[in-house]
Image (cartoon, rainbow, N blue to C red):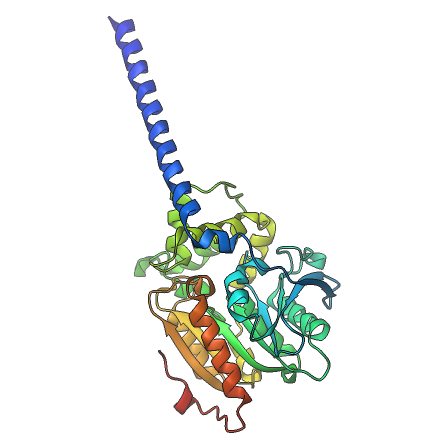
Length: 351
């Protein structure tokens, strides 16, 4: 009897596991079908190809860039975020290539750029990288517009702190923060009594995590990334697109940059960013909430405009490419005007 009961129990357990496995396989197939049927997928998986170029940063790190559009147009330099790459800007490049000569580059350790010389992923080095791109890709006598998403915007601030801001005519700081990233994030609520634990927990478990990520998309991973980085209207293909970039970023690079972000304090650099500056945030950005944008807007010497996009997460250039592109066009048109006035009281109106 006992042996029979044991065999029956083992069989039941085996059947339950098989059923769970079959159910998981069905969910996985449905998940992949949703991504494959998303109209955005074809666009994102076939990004525009630019003219390749390489520049050397101050410490010798070799950076990869691509140039899109006519040489006759004003230059727009695009700097992507943590774990991303040039292809992050696919939708923006399609929107803006008839308006700008676009220079997009891979940050050190990302995409086709080399790993940092000496393993240096400090924010100052990311600023040096932008300086190298401006020197190598912007024609002599021209002033570029620079736009950065997340870490890319932090790179602009780090650049402004130590380099000649007259190299540019305007800047756009998109979905970013310049300090207190751990304490102001909205991903992990922490009870008041445990507040002291917040920094070390988030610093090690999120920013500095070196764990390898799965190289296949799954419903749980997809749901987690949607919660972390996107607003409610993001499409399956948009989330999967960022997921591919995230998992392709080397774990040690991801961790080294993450620790630099956790330790970052760059608000003092804004005093040197004396060109007209656009600040854009997402109302549902949990990584760099609107509180960051509002603080930056109050510190910029020449705030052009603060824009808060509703129902938008951290990945605004993916989620709202048309709105971001329109804001950049408006920034350039406004700064082209002889009558341009950067009075924050008149211009810094959230929308």
